[in-house]
Amino acid sequence: MPMLLLPLLLLFSLVPSIPSEHPPSCHEVRAAFQIELSGKVQLVPAVPIEESNLQICKPKALTCCTRKMEERYQAAVRRNLVSTIQDLNFEFKYLIVAETSAFQERLTYLIDMATNNTLSLFDSKYRSMAQDVHESVKELFTDLSLNIMGADMPLEDVFSRFWDALFPLVYNHLINPGVVSLSEDYLDCLRLTRQDINPFGNNSNEMLAHLSKSLWASRMMKQALSLAEQVINSTMSADLTRECIHAQVRMRYCPHCQGLTLIRPCVGYCLNVMRGCLASLASLDGHWKDFFNLLKHLADQMSGPHDLEQSLLEIRDVVKQSIQYAESQGPYLSRMVEKVCGELQESPHKQLSEQKTMKDEEVEPTPAAKLQSLGLRTSDFIDHMKPLSLFFTALAERLCDREIAVRDGSTCWNGENVAESYTKFVVSSDFKDQVNNSEVYVGGFSSVINQVINKMRLFIQMASEKRIKAERWRITEGSGGYGRSQGEDASGDCDDEDGCQGSGENLDPDVKKSTDKSGKVNLTMKDPVHLNPSATGIPPKQRNSSDATSRSHGSLALIVAALFITSQFISQDEQEERA
Image (cartoon, rainbow, N blue to C red; front, side, top):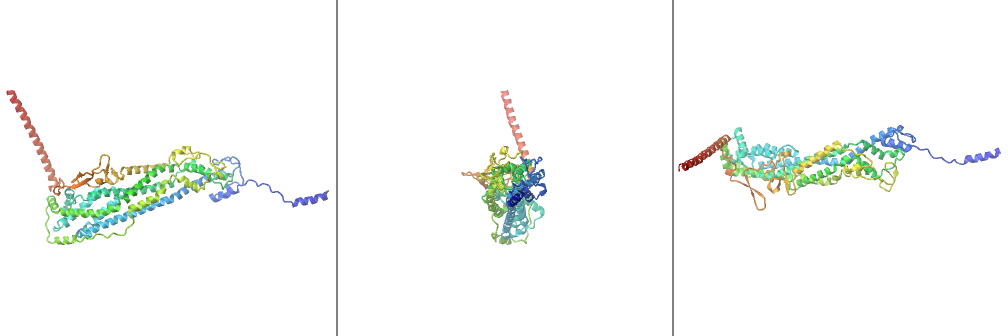
């Protein structure tokens, strides 16, 4: 019998043994933990265990996760979400920053070009004044540049300073070129007298109305670009709540706890999680769309009727017309100045013919090679940004695309198990709809987002109150010194043809308004001898005393007349009594 068992034992020893099923392992979870999180593999158990301290990925059976792993997962999802949002915002922010820099560069170029354009008038036609007027012209365009930058530089003050500086030069070199050099006191008197006698007429009124609109559009665009950058910065540092972080861990890493390291989230589940996390950012959407529409309006104005380049270059022609008007009123201006400031001694050393020769040699400036128009370039930029007008609405979708969320019909993770679809209700990106979000609890707005929303709301409100409309526009009190203009109706609106302008645009009180059949307001100038009621040639003190005297004489006449009438009534009563 033993001899028969030995061959049987040898036969069974040659038959390969049937392998048994491998025991559960956390090997793949360890590998993913080390690669994705650079975590210590010692934190991951070798085999599934019972873990009672888990707070997020609560197991239904054995798990490959521990409490320490959950803490690492929370830090990882926070870091990953912020990084992903920054990546998506990078192109957006780059466009804004680049355009802000290019806008400033083009603006500086336009100011320099307009400055040189105006100086060329004096270099070619009024050479005797060129050196003395140089600083005044540069100061004029520097002030206009500061106005665009947002400084409180009303146009009325800017051009008043320029005309004050120009009049003594025009008077000395063109109106009375044969007089001796003027003293500082006499120059001061000329500057003070300029506002009374209005030597340059009203040539600048229309230019100021047009320039004020162009400066407003450019100033608002510059401020809007700065605000847009603030908005983008606020989204790059999104305030992620505790509920959001937990939902992100459930979506990204809780499948690992079951050994499912390759499963992807269902698209509906991903959208609910992302929209809940980004609810504060999505609340920017409505305000951002209004803000973008305002940008489009400003760009249209800058590239159309209120092109800054045309407005700045127009200053040269207005200065030329104003000087020519002063020359045509030379005798009258001389009489007025002599009455106020005193007579001047003629110098035999100055020759009038020399001045006339120099004035006859005007040469038009050669157009310089220039950058693309500020308005057209800005309009192109806004068109390029148009797809980003929906940036905050589509942000959750873009993030889910990066998560490679799985569409219905394929195996995906629904937050609890592996499924073929996500059956819960998918909310929209609107903040008010997040109350129905089954994946993320959404509380109030982030304080940072609230600040940005308030800034956009105030900016849109301010711009809307002063908005240049297609047919009509309104100017109200605000930054830049613009106020309600003459000719504006009670509602604050006035037609472009009316020459609407702000406090910085000096509508001369000696300009009469006449309305023709078309409804347009025409500006006509009175007789130059009566340019201003105060332009009498009498010094201010004498004018005040004479006015007071006339008022006292008028009062005395009224008293005498009253006494005379009273006496007539009294005498009449006495006669009736006697009768």
